[in-house]
Image (cartoon, rainbow, N blue to C red; front, side, top):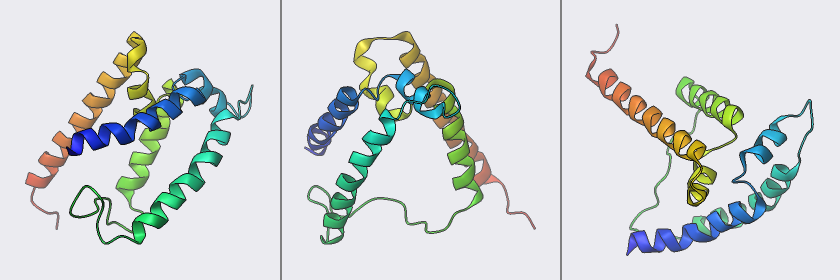
Length: 144
């Protein structure tokens, strides 16, 4: 049941990405090209999405538990650390190189472009490498 609810909740998000054109890497790369032929479309999409998300977060804060789970899940970290900054930098480099981030790439899978599949395979490989490194680091004794 939880997966069905996730699918029903994710469909409008994917549809919104598709309608807004954000599954087109060219639009994202155009937004990042501030020194060239800048495309403000992504800024408009973000300007519309941020208030909607803010309302959702405000409503969630008023609830003791989510509708379809026993507890809210999410990050409990409140400080900026090296891992967060390094992850953000790697994400932005990847986003700037190919114009995809995970959600639009998943939404565009239906178009069957090999570039999208290559991106997703590379993303999964990177995630696997990260988890492998995490396991190795967890096995190492703490530094003195």
